Length: 253
Image (cartoon, rainbow, N blue to C red; front, side):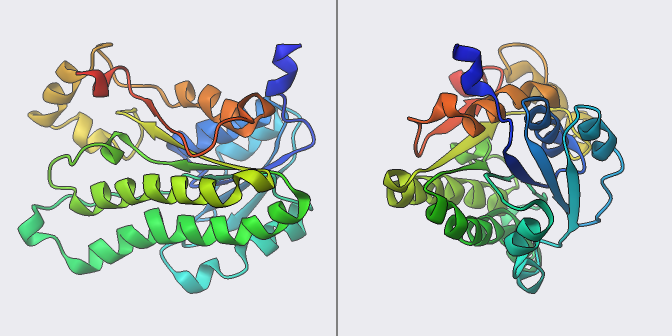
């Protein structure tokens, strides 16, 4: 049966930035499909997502980790395996955002953003690849953005990191696809989250963005869960190195 290919029973998914927003919705979707969840967050506060995962009957663990600090990331996958026994699915979702005109962009914020979006993603991919390569299977899902394809306004570090994440996805797919690891990238458009409200409520940019989205609205976080489950499941076994936009038609304009 085709729906059986989407089941994640017996698998463990590690989701970074799972405490809120898109990460929370993807973690819940993966749990509803049958996966146990390891939530990684900088605060360690997963009080919202934990009961929602447990309601599905799946197991839940949380790990506190500041992904902007390389020392904090050391042994993260080993810690996850100690808790859950394995990691079958990695979702590199954690993110931060800084907005400044390029001529004023602080280098300290540039480096912090690159650490979270790009360096931490490669670090965790590298860490999780070792047990995945040993088993001969695994699913890695990086979270890009429509800024994987565009430059945006006053977000040079974010745009650069998301472009680089697409290249990383393709390079890792080339290296690991024959060894059973699928590496793909989801590129969300404008979704309603706690991080996006500053932009959504901006009296100038908010209406400009909304007017450019063909479907006429911002996305809801739970609308990302289905694509994440697909890429985490056997239904996507022949997908390698793909960057998939889910944006209400934004990039079609």
